Length: 252
Length: 150
Image (cartoon, rainbow over the protein chains, first blue to last red):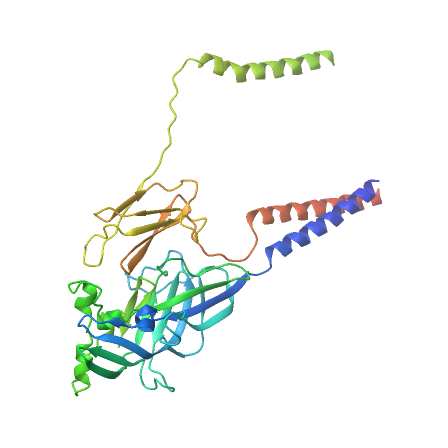
């Protein structure tokens, strides 16, 4: 009787131990983390610049590289401008040229790429580089903006090419919903948001607002069609965001 | 045997008396209950220093980073105060947004604050249970074989 009880006890131990090891997983849970690029309604639907030009966009090519998501503790502070200190890090290997104006006025943000075996957790920081494309419609440039502007009956078809390369270090996405919270066998996303009103200004925002004070407007680009170059300082324009959240930016 | 039983009965009675007596002694005393709370105040401003008066505020507790624990608006000075649930230690996230601008503050609350992010491995409970299982298994096996030899 005692012998049977002992054997039964050992058998139960083996089963319990096996189950516990199974619960431990022997590794980490994973899910899919997607990376999106978003030019917002400014790009998709067009807008009026601070100097009264009604601008619509046919293509807005932007080339992205070294797109990386991080889990950081403590959370990364983009105001500090320091390096991101990650606990977990995943990223995309390729260089991507995407057209932020792709699709109609109500098109969703552009899917840049995804990592399917991303460790679960909260990806609360993101880094990317905006680089000159080596091929394709934006070859030689980091940004190519193609569209039409109209003011007082004057219509200008424009192509604006930007060659500066930038590095963006950002904290958590700021918007209607929190992003980057990845659970097992599920999908989460992060967004690289580009505020083109920072380049052209926005007629719907007061002219003395910081956004308009720092923006170039469209007038210089209209003049550029007549041969006057436009000096663009991408570091000061703060094109890259995470939703409404700001990033630390360095361009050269 | 009888004396032993009386002793045990006496002990139980004394113990019960000790538990009841204090309630009788302090039945007419005053009683003050209090809770200690720590209020958190944030002040939201634009880069220019202008207060974000009327900005939307969303507060997230450490145990549920997806759902706002509290929502509200900043006052004219950009201030917003709240009292976090002290039982939820960790990093409380406060998001403030207005007119296309926003930021998020991360405020540690309580000792040993733990932030989101997870890694694999075993929980403490699992480790303890496994250790007990191993010890029990070794002892059981030893007893089994020692009994056979005897």
